[in-house]
Amino acid sequence: MRKELYKALCERLKSIGEIKHIDLWNRNVEFIEQDTLWERPAVFIEICPITWEPMSGGKQQRGSGLVKLHIVTDWKGSAADGSPYQEESLAVFDYSQKIQSVIDGLTGEKFHALHLAETYTNHDHEEIVESIEVYKMRCVRTI
Image (cartoon, rainbow, N blue to C red; front, side, top):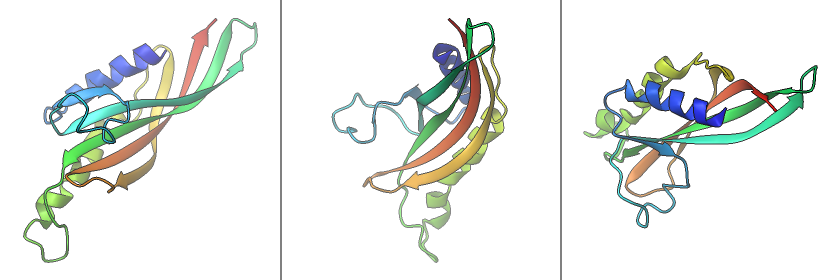
């Protein structure tokens, strides 16, 4: 199920031609100096814990969980009111909208209907901005 989900997300994210790197999340922004260099904007896919329940018959399970998309861009300067860099700096949020337009409702054979549940921005990095889009999903698997 996770492999199918990851590949489907990659396929949709590639349709946004501006995204230069897609990978599994591995705390990439925390170790940016130690990691292999990757171009930005980048999207890292974090598959969060999935809660599973047995379905009738005992051979299948139904699950629900979250997927976090970490959108990493370069910091373009101050977004302060009146800053000459404001528009360029705030453009980071446009990626969230573009991604939602291709991800929301995504369904596969073993996962169903990803829907945006939460959005937040991590400003704890000097030269990059990390926007995180959290999607809810339902899924099934056969034992």
